[in-house]
Length: 304
Length: 192
Image 1: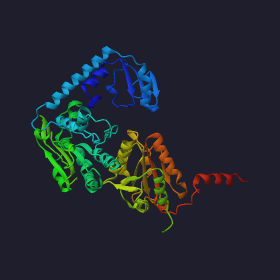
Image 2 (image 1 turned 135 degrees about the horizontal axis):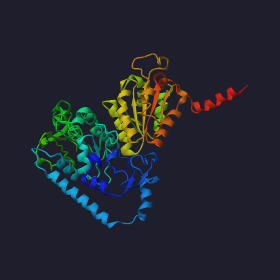
Image 3 (image 1 turned 45 degrees about the vertical axis):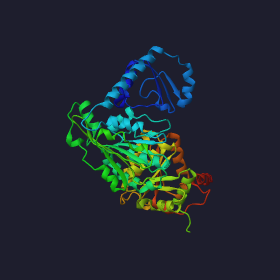
Image 4 (image 1 turned 120 degrees about the vertical axis):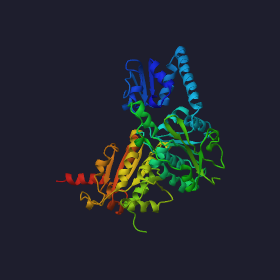
């Protein structure tokens, strides 16, 4: 929903006459249905969240799963609306497929993330950074059941992927960890915490700690916002992320760094096999005026 | 072996709260706590980050992936300032995190000692549910207990500040906690 959402979520919010908010306190108030458009019911375990973002007629304070169990038998099925929603979803899926297949000068990050999604092990844990990578995560990553994923959601602070990934790995060293980050976040602090990974991976039953670095040399989300929200041109001085050899850095730390430069390498994604563990990085232009995208993933060389 | 310190008591209480891992970064303001962690290294793992902000993010991440309380430990110097952003992550996503922070010795408080800042003011917003300074050994374990209870009950970050000399002080005997002494004091004051 909102900046990170899909056309389906936009259509849903624009077309609904009833809104059920379940355990959500989504801060982007401007993307809820228009005031007066929908009658709303909200379920939240925290009473202070009820009505905080959209006026609600019925407040249900309590556990979301239990409340839904009680609520669902009372809801009549509305066939007409359901088919409309299915149409919204189909429209989005067709658009998403076009985005994924879009030919770019080099690598298309949407295709890379979608491809990564198809390779996620069923016992993986996922950590995500903040920036344009969140758009690709929300739109193209299908988490297998039981695979957790976290990011700095409400604070939306850059720099969450590596420390979250390390915390998750320490909790479950026998599960592969997949982190998604941009080059801006990696340079802010992710590169430093790679040293922590390099110092600890030998202690882990499954040493796979795969980091996908989308490296386009640009603070993309803010570059988009400069154009889309302000109507300003991208300001290169503020937006440029200096070039850095992520894969070589991984090798320097005794990890495996692989740079992926072209589409043919994308399907050879790192988390699928074990051992030998693999890693990836790539570089390419995703659109005119948007700089190159690169991908890095790192795992220890001798992980078996 | 020398008598257990307040720092030893804090680490012992952490184990009783089920804490097996503390995310942190060293500093002279928490050396007695680090020494206590060294003495219990087989029970509580100190995971060092490369920067205190990352330690706080790790504690928040720990809370998110485990559903339990995350714990981070930093010194009274610049480290405590670095901690803030990671604690705000916990606050805005409503996750329980206990931050344990050092502070200068009690006799130096308010003197403008090296690295000294007003920690209650610093943490007042991010740890709005609970921020407390341990100025005397008798405040333990109830301050730590209240911090954990508050973090869990309100799903938010809390802060326990421990003066350097208090960390090093002898651990009071069990049952001599301040809340009971408050009763003693009240009883004494009530006497004619």
